[in-house]
Length: 301
Image (cartoon, rainbow, N blue to C red; front, side):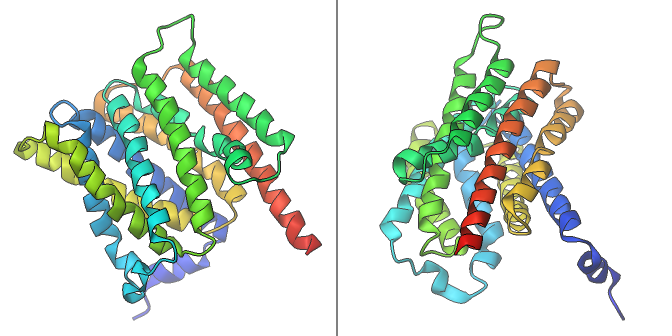
């Protein structure tokens, strides 16, 4: 019997497949954030980070080892260890902040990462300095200021932690960019998850306590949502050019807002939408410019 679902999927244009993956990615990561928010009533952030990485690794294992143990072979294994360290540092800021910061605000601020990354690449990877990168950075931080509204409301330490988390994750993407020159994506993900575990467990020990049945349910949900979020994000970003994927990535904001309203009755205000749109416009602009630069280099070669 002919199975209609695979045939229907194959018949979809690439843009439609990208949209599906990115919508699913937004749903899974928004659910993860909401479960972190709810679970923080009982669970320390470090405990949730351990669960997030362990269960995400289990979910990704079939993909990571689909070509056998060659995923473990890395020309620069000690360099890849830094990915695990930086991921934990970024996660700590994100997990702690979500205890009090609205999910939609946190999601909007996370769009700063693709804005910050190209500017850091100038200083740490020696890439060409382009005005578009600094224009996008300025516009992106304008969007962040719209959300934070200094002078009109008190800026909480948790909001500052989110900004720091976005910057740290930008450094994380720089290391991935460097590592991808001589490592497969599966090897990079494998070492990131493996290297993050010892540090995450070490940080979790001082606050270690046996969770209740409800807490175990939260930990399981966080890990599974993170794992499937990672899978769908990988499939989405690999399904087309990054400039094509980015507009669909913005769907994370309305998805996060809808889940927040449905689960905890927390609706984003107007300034979150405006600031998120400004940050995303800056991210889309710089990604579009970077894609054109790469295309021009390819044509010149």
